[in-house]
Image 1 (cartoon, rainbow, N blue to C red):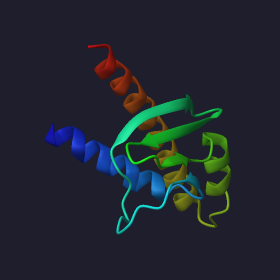
Image 2 (image 1 turned 45 degrees about the vertical axis):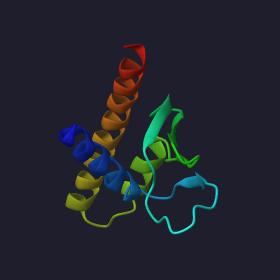
Image 3 (image 1 turned 90 degrees about the vertical axis):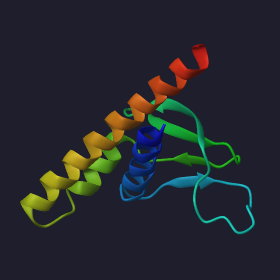
Image 4 (image 1 turned 60 degrees about the vertical axis):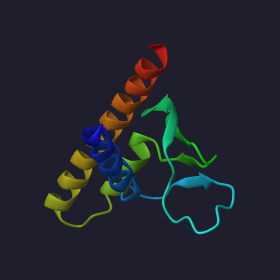
Length: 106
């Protein structure tokens, strides 16, 4: 359980750095952090929707949009690092989606 919390925390933290997100969220008094993720819809090519227990829904950019933003870095090393992070984030989102589906089926 502790490991899953670390993975989810790292995923959310990493994705926040991925660029602009569209957020649909009800007002939550005193809350500055996303709540528990309950569902992930979509895929990297068409876009994900990340649903939280508190009703918050995050829409990260598609993988191609996020990679295109990586191209704006001036240094090659920064572009490569950014593209690697994007691939990792979207791979992890897909894994989270499969994990949540598996947890619901049992």
